[in-house]
Amino acid sequence: MAIEILPTNRAALDKAIRAKATELQKTHAVRGRLNDGGGLILLLVRKDCVWATWWRFNYTVGGERKTISLGAFPQVT
Image 1 (cartoon, one colour):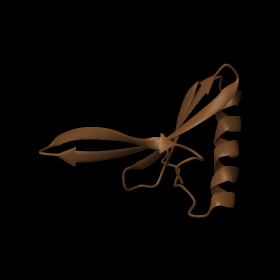
Image 2 (cartoon, rainbow, N blue to C red):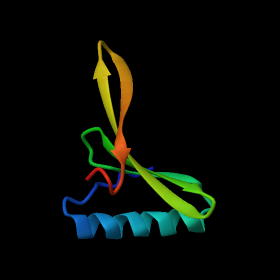
Image 3 (tube, rainbow, N blue to C red):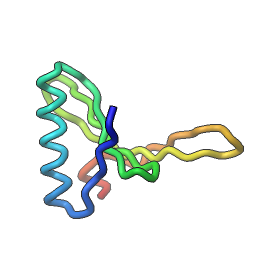
Image 4 (cartoon, rainbow, N blue to C red):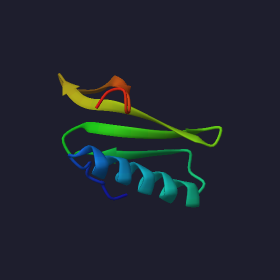
């Protein structure tokens, strides 16, 4: 699976989210992600035909991988 890099401006990010949601819908997937390559992830989850989006951050402490939720998009941008 290829890593898709997050755009840095809001308009491009909105466009990337719509494109990813369309791609996921074609494959009937219910989850997808957009990455920045440095641990920041925008998680897309389909619930009742609506896409919800959340920011997540993956990091490593003492060799153990952890994930923290940063909030929902677009409330947190």
